[in-house]
Length: 302
Image 1 (cartoon, rainbow, N blue to C red):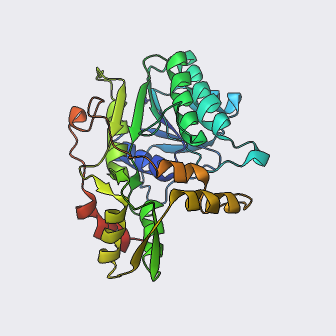
Image 2 (cartoon, rainbow, N blue to C red):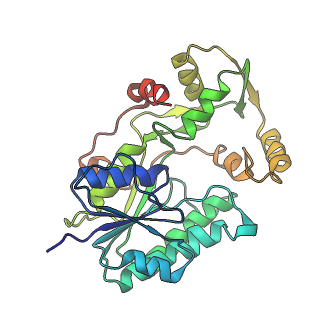
């Protein structure tokens, strides 16, 4: 009997690609479901991977992507709204997430991993964070046994975090968010992918909420300094009040793809640390890699 695939919604995104690779390396069959589906260029003969067009705003496409699946991982993410195209936080992170969970339930799929983020809260000033929290509620309402996976800020080869910092440290002056004291727990994308795949295994887990942060806690200034040192740069670091960042984001908002949004500024005003009472890498038998040990490779592969 042919093995049923695990469907990865958002399987062409930064985390989704890592999840697909982890599944394939685990010997699993995979179905990539994405708005613009494509197969990875690293596939080898015998790898059981298929790609299907799927917009999680489309009921029929989501249902089709789940047909015959044994598990599903929703790694779809939207960081900048495009209202004219109907790509809003509510449509993707709330309604879309709830749709995936409801249709997974209807398809008899019990193992659904929903990727959210550390700090998800309906009380946040950030529309993005509020939508993430509302999406979690929609998922649990539709499928109470779904597992919520909240990673910290992701890093890895070809990421957004280190790529932006690598560009910034080549400037003579690098502005900091506030005084650069916001604390982060950077986590390698491959470790989060490994956790997601382990959670789709048939062995049941007692926890339904996991918060995954890396083993190092760094503030933003320290993060900039590490990237600068790795690239042999010595820029001056300039503290900049958050009010100035909000004003800059407002000015940039009319651009088609603004390099800075107010939601990103709100995110940088709060520490982004895993809750020690939530499920962790330790519960899954995973030892996450440090930024210190991964930085050189991540920047060299860029």
